[in-house]
Length: 183
Image (spheres, rainbow, N blue to C red):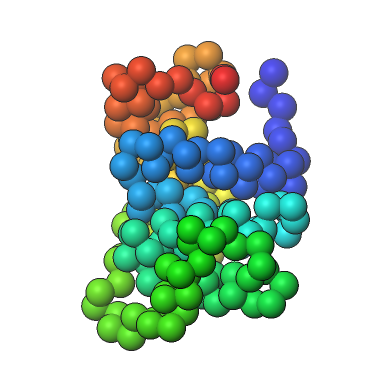
């Protein structure tokens, strides 16, 4: 019907979708993208008040796996606050405590995120960043990866018409996966 979604509804869909695709990304071994999606959700944690501790725990674990040490440290410190600490699962408590005790101080060991040009103005931004600070446009996100769509790597789900990066969609279909928006 080509109706535009209100921006608030679109943002909530994006955050919820980012949370939902993490399990698939981890299963496929893409821990870096899973960490980026969990960071997106963690920045909007107020929308998941009943799931704060499990989401932040997942964010810490995936960030640590992906060498995003600064983010892992930040959310590990949040989890060790008195209001969250009792709810942290015992199997992760020691690991999170160690991250808090031994923060990485060497920035060269920190993983870096890929960048690309905004599809509207060409301004270079992080691939997980949807809002362009230069032109103020909001780029669509990929249904498979949750990352920002690229001008030269574009396709749509044949059923729901949601945008996807061509290579990511082909790989997902090759692995027998289906579009999460359609499920």
